[in-house]
Image (tube, helix red, strand yellow):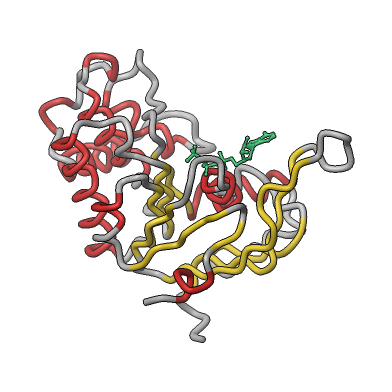
Length: 235
Ligand SMILES: Nc1ncnc2c1ncn2[C@@H]1O[C@H](COP(=O)(O)OP(=O)(O)OP(=O)(O)O)[C@@H](O)[C@H]1O
């Protein structure tokens, strides 16, 4: 297996909540998977099977209880929280089912948020990058609108622009179209697909929509905390 273009690698990853307590529950039971640069991969499976838990681990929002996880070639096992935050900021973009924009900020300000980083104040370069991204998602005419004044589909397009701000190698999209009407879902899916093809961004796209899953390069099926091995290796 080629190693250089692997942007996410999980080996024997397990995740238990409340470990060591009577309420302990293991949700992921030993996941092996690789995601390569440029792959657009659907993540499907029944409700409660562990899809979001898996994405939260890959997004470095939570830690495995066993196994190894490497992102962009870096083994995260012994990283402290600061190192995880740094790696996450440089490598991962997130789009969630609910956009999580800051309603009192404009579209432009929301897209600039991830770029503020340590500097903490906006620069002209950040503003220009945010304008470019809003143009990319077809919303330059909305840049000065408050997020709360945008439609659901527009808000999700701003969320996509924000997720791309740091040019992530990996985009994690957890049911990004789940709350949208068919037309807006198509626009958001098309945007993710275009970005994937143009920039080689690897995408994990959680969906309950079989028609959208069928349009991805491959499908990971999560069932009872395991990834279907056939689907995981299928091209
Ligand atoms: N913090 C937590 N503490 C305890 N159990 C949790 C926690 N987070 C998730 N779970 C449990 O882990 C299991 C998997 O949840 P997860 O959200 O990953 O499923 P999912 O496949 O994304 O579901 P859906 O399709 O409904 O979004 C569920 O049984 C859930 O109740």
